[in-house]
View (spheres, rainbow, N blue to C red):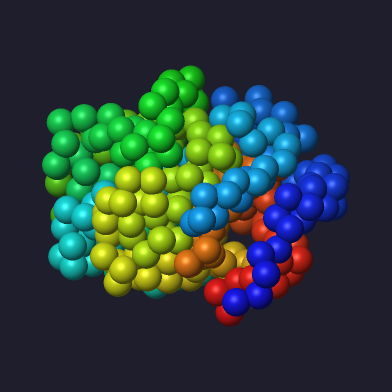
Length: 308
Ligand code: GLN
């Protein structure tokens, strides 16, 4: 094992390099409430399994986690359904945008993977059948993993998305027509919009992600939430599907399992070592944080660490 990199110095170098890139991206505006977030925010946090924490920028400021929630809802559903979960959702990269409907028709309402919207709606349905209030259960799970007991929803963001969520509504109805949604469409959509609207900081996301670096066990509590095999598989799906139709390019550039969201956050995992979260609200054409992806690319280059 080589000596640990100087993570703090590396984060500061990265911040200086990538901050200006935000000007080349666009803050998501299809959810009008998200468009209010200043494009020049930047944060990055690294939490290691041996308990060290490094951060730069607005790392304690909370933002809308959006699709990063898809990772945590998948963990919850997998814990309940185990292998049978894969009868309802696949694990192949889609090669299509996160909100695409095109493959659903050919695949009889079985979404390609849990990290595109269609797949996350099916996962949310699993949670809606199991919990009286699935959105609360997701919030509690995130509080437990992050240790931040005051995490909450941003109701303005959830309502703003519900008001403009025509594509997700179309998708949920389409999946329902194939019989792959048990709960009422509206129940699933409301829960989905709320879990996407949870606000977390880079520090909190990095802590929450550590169980995936630690083979399924939460380092702080010693609780084994996943088996090592399940954790390995989730990391594999993150690598192949976590950044939508850009997942191939992201693996090429960054080489870490990661999940992005249109709030501009990305949570990435270096199995056996650390979790790293980055936030910059301006997005590229695939809906991934432009400066965030570049920051992670520099991170694996400068530390010499990736899964490859
Ligand atoms: N709530 C967003 C949506 O469903 C999440 C998308 C994302 O972060 N990629 O469109």
